[in-house]
Length: 265
Image (cartoon, rainbow, N blue to C red; front, side, top):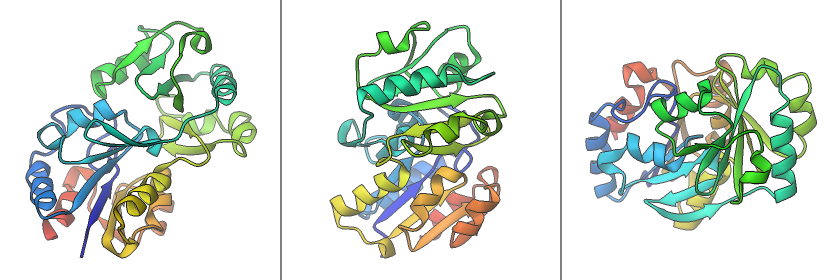
């Protein structure tokens, strides 16, 4: 019997950066039907909780949120779980992120997200696309941000993987968890965080077995969830390594692959 369904969002349910109104309304009916039968549904994403809630507005109080790359888990607005960086680590990470050539970056705290400039491509995309609560605070992020930091994301419109490869990823690979989230993002979260850790928390918290769990994803940061679910699905538009790691494949997000599987339940 399925007790927990976990799905990535960008590239799995909708296109990258799509905001409120982008999700096929049929998902709301299926999720409502499943949760009414006692099945828990968790959206697991690099997105902020507010951004996920806007996307799932009609069922926002019925689902769970693993947000900021799995660093926090919410039930509606109640925080159940959080992994944060030590202050020193966060500040060093921020300083290094600012030095990655041709890239911008975003810092995600337990309450808000932060970037440097309102006139940046990153700020416009996060507000107009993702629907973030993000604050542009100038170049001194270390001196401005007072809340705990759960994620630092390096952004480039199509070459985040290549631009972070020469020195940033080698420098940080043994100290934080680095995962690629599409061609635009390199997410940096605490070593003991991530989507897999968020899923493991849900399973332990609610006494749910891998055999009772289904997972959907498309990108590198979803792979760690697959080993925790007996049934894992990569959408057809997923990276090749994600398809190899999954036990099943479904249609791409633009052909409503996840929706078809959920209806089959």
